[in-house]
Length: 80
Image (cartoon, rainbow, N blue to C red):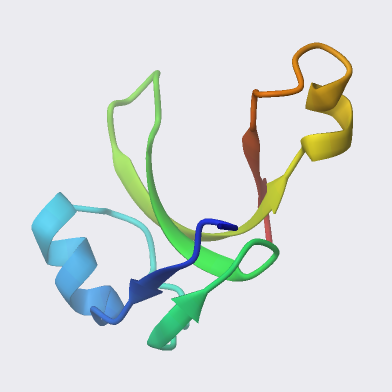
């Protein structure tokens, strides 16, 4: 499995649930969020403690990780 999931809540609902403070991203619902897709992520600023709702690109680091452990799967997020 490649770790797909559904993301159907509107940005306004996610912002209200988590109390985010930044302007809301343009978030479209998806029933098939796959690796390399843009995904909504709530991040906490370590200095201020403020929460931000951002769109990040998800990707798997299989080639890098396999050299260290063939059973380990890693996931990384990068800003869109």
